[in-house]
Amino acid sequence: MRRVLLVPVLALVVLAPSGVQAAEGDLLVCDAPPEGTDVLMPGETISLEPAAPQYDAQFYTYTDVTFQLDLYPATASDTATVTSTLSWELDLNNWDLILLDGEGNELAASELFQAGPLGDAPTESISRKLKHCSLFTVSIENEQGVALDELDPLQLQTGSGSVL
Image (cartoon, rainbow, N blue to C red):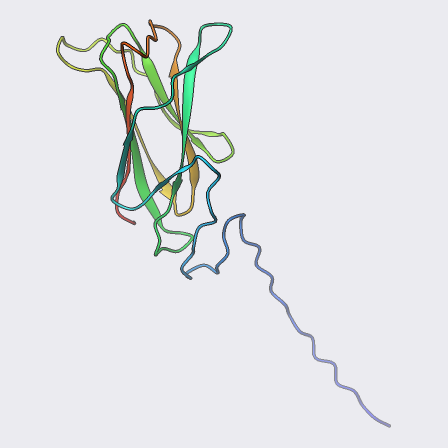
């Protein structure tokens, strides 16, 4: 009589989040970002004048700027602090900054009332630690004010610190 020895085999399957194509600890190359997305590298600052705000039926204005944080060479768990600062000239305007993740969830907000000393340009600023390859959106909103973008152009600076 012949004996057969059965040896159980354990298979481990690791599911990675979307956009992650490497094992933890391996260097990760980010997926190509959606069209119109600005790619932010470590230690870089992107300065831009955002597109003209959109107006809805309640005179609420907003504009969104989308970025991808690319820290390569980095692993999926590497992070960097991202900071966005918005400035403008007219104290009559009261702009706010909202930081959203790739799914539209709020990560941080700066919703200060702008009533600074004369001569100080009004600003809003937000900071958040984000992971390598993160897609994020900086939403610029104005619930009150004159919103005359041709008289009061917005300046947005978004920068990344070094890899943490």
